[in-house]
Image (cartoon, rainbow, N blue to C red; front, side):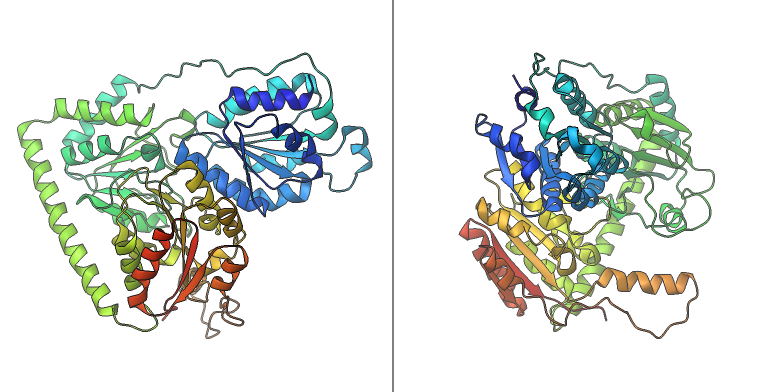
Length: 554
């Protein structure tokens, strides 16, 4: 057999069903071998970043590891940003790129470079297969490393001559690896004691709880404690239902803001996330003075990365939350249960007040022209099927999105991790492939959409049931907000407006762009037309694009 046979058989042995790629000449052995493996579906993308973005969202929605097929140095370079986002999202995938013939690499042939070195900063492991005899070991290790907690992308360079070399080493099956999933019982007991005795416990949750399917367990724990639940500032999954009275949204992007949000908390439980991803520097710790901090993660390397906890717990997140629930239940006395019930009632009252305040703001903006963000998101939510998978990259409309959609299904929402824009359109085809039979709504701003507009072609090519809703305000609105914050924080006096942040000259024609790639599209400027347009788009069954003109920054 040849190296390419071992590579393909390794994919089969590890259960790979989809390859997302943008191929080139050095990938000829891979592409040619696909003909002999009909169980593996190749998803063609028109740009390398789209291929990685689609694979990332596929991995997160399906809970399976895909393979990505890129083309030598420029192709890998095009994909680096999306690989970074996948790393931050802890999305497992094996990223490959064809490499030039090793017998001439020293002469720097066209398109060649040190691919493993290029990919290393944004991957868990990066390597190049040096000869066909090591293909079996490299691929087995690649699939093991990418799925180990914290999961994430690995990179394998595949020289064209190595893929054609003979070898007697066949593909290796993954084998069974037993990983301890239970947190230390003594530490769980101490953490439960602090939580039970706390007068103001607070929970901050990350994506790992949602990925582990432990959302219902966390709801029980939060209700038992009467504790508010906050999310990370940037979220990729639903780990706590946004419709629940205890949900308080995301924490701010700076330590002082987080500290203020946590208020008088005397016990803070951090569950499965990057605590904390800051955008702006503020001095001091993000925790209230004297608060006990309990940090639980699925891998020891993630505990206390930025801030030392009083107790660190390691284990599968569902097992951690269930263990804490059991231990807290055992320790709560009658008085503590009564105080928890009082806190829960106060949270419910506070949530009702917050919802009423938001509805008043939405109603005030309801008839504005151009269409207000609250109105646009409300109309979108009302027209979207309840079983739809929502791919969201709204950024400055995120608060209105959360209020309108209140995502509460762990398998019904995918957000953009990492901070790089363009993930929504790129990820939507991957989400659709991962959830056959379910409609997909992709909500994106216009600036973000232009980073991966080629994804529309892939959606049309596969006839995927995706409705792309593009919020068109013809500006990089988030940059305008951040420029305001920068000027305020650094006391910069400026009357220079917002340089290089407008996208209106010339105006972007999203309906025309969609039509050119086989996706029927329309532009909506009347708020009354949003609902009918979205319903008709879903009823059509294939990909559709609806561009919605909304207000800019006031």
